[in-house]
Image (cartoon, rainbow, N blue to C red; front, side, top):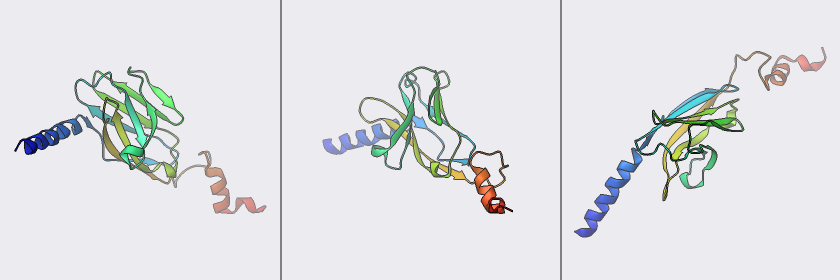
Length: 151
C-alpha cells in the first residue's frame, strides 16, 4: 500500500513539473527568414537559466543558446534568447533559416536534478518566391534558368 502511494505521489509531482513550462508544439519558418518561439513558465522560475536545445532525444540534445539569469538577450550564431521575467515568457529567435534547421527542439529551464522542458517541432519551408538578392539563391537561380551556360 505504501509503495502505491509513493508512486502516485511521484506521478502527481511529475505532472505538476511538466506543466511548469509550455510552448508551441510546432513552429513553421521560411528558408532564409526567421522564426520566433515563445515559451511560458510558472511563478518561481524567473531567475533560473532558460535554454534552447536541438535534438529529438531529451538527454542528448545540443543546447544552442541559454540565458544568463537576467532579461538581457543572449545571441549565439543565428539563435538568440531573451527572458521576460515579469511576464514569465522567454523568446527564442532563429535567423537566416536553412532547410536543415528543421528538427525537434526543446524550450527548457535549468534546475537541480532533471531540467524542465517542452518539445517544439520546427519545420522550414523552401522560399520559392525569393528574389535574386536573397542569400544563397543567386547561384540556384542561375542554374535553374540556364544563365550560367555562357549564352
